[in-house]
Amino acid sequence: MTIAWHRESRACSLRGEVEILLRGDHISANRAASRFGRVETGLVAEVRVQDERQFAVHVHRAGDLIGEGVVLGEPALMAGSHLEALLPSRVRWHDGPMEPDPTLTALALGVLAARTRHQHDMATRRRLQSRPQQVADWLLELQDCTAWGLPEDALSHLTRQGLGTLVGSTRSSVSAILGRFEQLGWISRAEGGLLITDELALATYAGNSAAARHQIAGQLRRSQDALAAYAGLLPPQAPTAIEDDGAW
Image 1 (cartoon, rainbow, N blue to C red):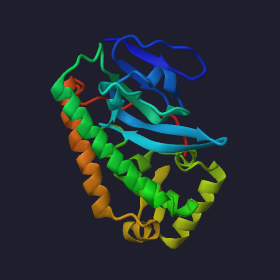
Image 2 (image 1 turned 135 degrees about the vertical axis):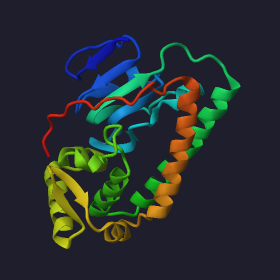
Image 3 (image 1 turned 90 degrees about the vertical axis):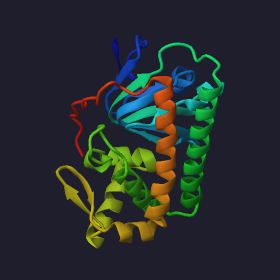
Image 4 (image 1 turned 60 degrees about the horizontal axis):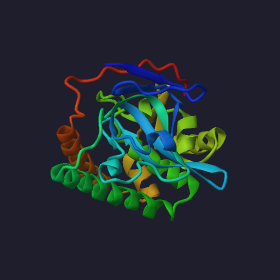
């Protein structure tokens, strides 16, 4: 097995099935369009650039698949998008062509349907949210994300710059919003990261029901696990964490 290291500042061709991304690394839409894989550790965002504004349209957490549309003959990313590692991440790409397979197609359709529902649920909320409400919404989503393939949530490691990427805002604006949440007692700073201390208040403010969020996310995860297992993308053992030198 060959591990390919990629930085946006230099060219890199994938050799083998595993790719390591450091915080802030990009995978262009052209390079990812025909790739199908699984995030083993870390957090990778699908980032859209529109009207000179950059924002995340989806986040692939540890265990999530990237590019199930490729199985169905569709591009993995929409035009104007790229993948960006918000945390040091490890992606296992499917090695070899995708042969026509009715079972594989049915499983991919299941993932696509669950992902579409998840994205529609998020988009419906965020059309009506202010920027601070969007930050609150993302905090709740990230609390549910496993950051390293270990039982830690992504808030333990994500930076304010990473949050800014998600909501399409600046680091300073995100800092001001987080400062207000901290004053209200909804969050606290913990070991360089964040800790949600009043999930109910934050969810009420964001209009994000924990029960609905967990139900939709659970359906997406189960459908992805079934496809990953069938496609041979599940690792033989738990992956190890990637050392992180990023600062909050």
